[in-house]
Image 1 (spheres, rainbow, N blue to C red):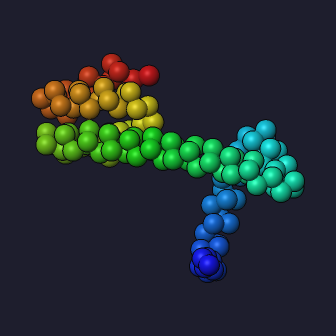
Image 2 (cartoon, rainbow, N blue to C red):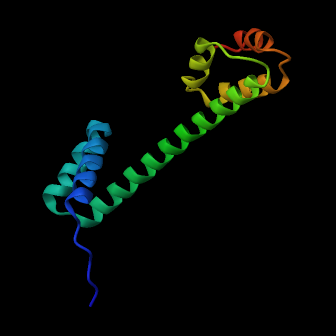
Length: 126
């Protein structure tokens, strides 16, 4: 007979917090479907819904990680050229367009100076 470890209070609180945050992020249709499944006790449907939620969260986490990694790479390359202004660092860190960050990374690798980079990316702004 298998014994399942009882969830301690901290684990349960973390799970409830995660679940509450995920439900807030659902659109009205997704939220309605999940609530209906909970009311009906539709375990199979709930598992499918949870799987979709986890996949969605994983994809969003992956994207955020890529954005952060790419921004940090741009900053690292530029730091080899000199000291970055706070506003330039902020612009790089807050950029949410992965494709634009890719272009900036290439521009940073080719730049001869920070000013050269700033002039180049000025042409790449959305």
